[in-house]
Every structure is written in C-alpha cells, then in structure tokens.
Length: 302
Image (tube, rainbow, N blue to C red; front, side, top):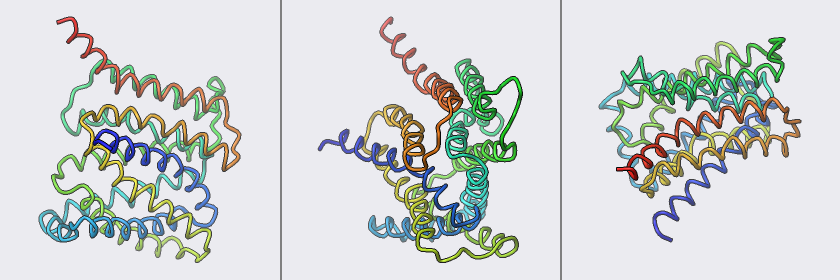
C-alpha cells in the first residue's frame, strides 16, 4: 500500500474505535463511579502508551521531555486526564449516551472561539455562523426537542457535558506551546495526572472493585479512547499530505457512535438527537470544509 492508503487505514481504524467508546463509557459506568473509571482507564493508557514508545524506541524521551518542562506537564496532566475525563464521565453518568456524546462533540466548534482570547486568533464570519448553528443543535438536544418549554432532563449533566468541551479545548490550547513528541507528551500528562486522580479518589470515593466485566470495560476505554487510538490518528496524519481529508473522515465518528449506542445499549434515539446532531455536523462542515471550497474556487477564478 502507498502512504495515502496507509493513512486512510490508520484514520478509519481510529474513527471506528472512537465511535465505540461512548458505549464503553456507559458499560463501564455500570460498575464504577466516574472517578474510579478515570483511574482504571488512565492506568491502562499509561501502560499502553509506554509499550508504544518502547516499540518505537522512544521511551528514553520521556525523562528528557519531563526535565525540560516539569511544571508544564503537571498542569497539562491536571487538565487532561484528571479534570477533563472526571467531568466527561460524570456527564455520561447522568445523561443518555446519545446526548452526552453529541454535546461533547461541539468542542471542535468551541476551540476557535476560545483561541481568540487565549491565542490571539481572529474569528471569521464562518466561525461565528458555525457556532450559532452548532449551539442551536445543542439547545435542541439538551431540551429533547421541547425548545419552548425549556425542559431539561438533567441540567447538571448538560452543564458537565458542555464543561468537558471547555476543558478539552483549554488542554489543546495549552499544548500548542508543546514542541515535544506527541505520544511522549500524552504519556507525561497521564502519568502526572495520576496523583490528582488518586488523591481525589482517596478523599472523596473508594477504590474500584475488581469486577472482571468492569475492569475489561475500563481497560477498553483506556486503550481505545485515550491510548492506542491517539497513536493511530497521529500515524494517519503522518502518512497523509492532505490533513483536511483526515478531518473530514472524523465526521463519521458521531454518526457511527449513535449507531453503536442504538444497537448495543438499546437506547431509543430521539428525533431531537438526530436533529441536534445534524445541526452540529452542519456547523462543523461549514467551519472545516467551506473555507477550502472557497479557496479552491477563488484559485480557479484567478
């Protein structure tokens, strides 16, 4: 296979695995509290990322990168995995998977908005229009389609799902200042995030039970939400000369995820979820694809 075919293979594998994790979240949360699940998943991810780096012959980079910027990675670890996944799993614990998954996917719309105050970026008209459309979709999903009655099934769950998008964006904005190896950086963040997780767990919760099914579900989350899938996506980007194509492929994730949620969790997918997710995907398409179409059209005219 040529590099483009390899890139698509890695990319499709990553998209498929990410599409399954919403189901894994709900299954694992049947055995663990949100914070217990964070611990099991992060421990699994630390092991998986260490093995990946060992196979790549880059494990020696871990100590080198850490010594260069220890405080940076400590803050990064507090944002992700500790705060982000604690809040995300708490949202999934309170909401149907279809709602939590759809709302969490709006991070891609929020990122350019937060890049304005934090990175000094400017907003285009497309960014603003996309944000309005996306958050109309959020409102439809959050109210279950009852937009006139303003009836929210779980206001706390909705707020947590939206807060998770803020934390995820802050993590990525913070890491724009990181020039190290991406997998090494993720391993450092997860390793340094562990003390926050363990201390909070000991103070507010109990250690997770040793249920085989629960541990397998938690390990699945650690492998395919946090660890292996991230490496697959990086390999896809590394082997392609058209990153925009990879971004377009990511649009499949929420659609496939809804299919898995309906099939495996047996959730009855509400009309409001389809409609709201349609608004969110339309907003993402406008934001990600329209600028490329306009640029191509203008280049043809000239």
